[in-house]
Length: 344
Image (tube, rainbow, N blue to C red; front, side, top):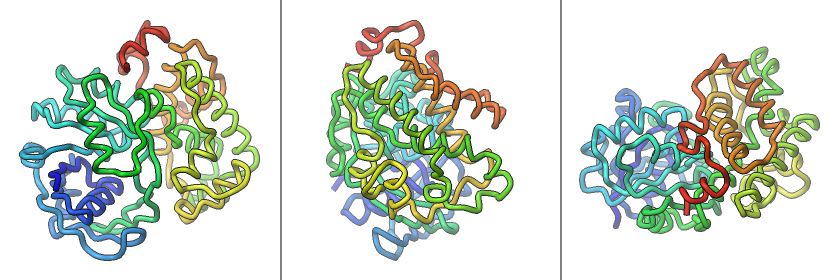
């Protein structure tokens, strides 16, 4: 049995708490907002892929108490909450091995760069669950990933070992860049969100994002963005799978070409589009996804005009100036060799 501090009580954290509890681990649950945490004081209600019921976690507590005695900390928080997580970890002087589930693009570099002394740190390419909070204290889990990529920054090997033990679907990657650039949301969300902004604002997101939102034009832009992702990965020495193949490995896409594969994926089939431009598909996947991706592309010397265009338009749509770039990743002025020296 492992004692796991799950940091985040959103859909991902709630799903992780259910999964880890069901598999015999002691879970300590924490969230930056006390009112969200209080919803789970009587346990984590759940429906879907992990059954229907209530998972009784060992502890629902403040961060210091959640980390006390924990063998591992698993951060299941949106990237936009990362600055608050970093501040909380710094205040708690946390040394517990930390697993970012998911890490997004550049998440491990961002956290390590922001902390004076970072704990052993590992990152996962994609959240290990497809889940949504349907009502206070209840998470609907529509999918559990079959495979995700995991990697650690130098010195974080123990965190990666714990990640592989806690989440059997983790396949170790050579470095965090390989895991980061296998992040499907980087490609999957921005084209539909940015190009569908008028539709989203007019309807409040009253359509299925992964079905009706994947029009032929959106898919063409998505495929062009995916080609840029693969080119940047190649610039750092990695050959990664195209989006549809990666999603099939995770278990969120069906057969066929890119558009058909996304539209036929059962886990995402009923998920509605963003209800506003404040949704995480904008704030997270643009400012914390495309922005660090473009920074990595610049370091690798790879041109990414589609990503840069979506980034500019996405930031203009949301009037968002909170983006993670080269300075936040700690790679400003570095070339390919310099970035690789940080991650290997």
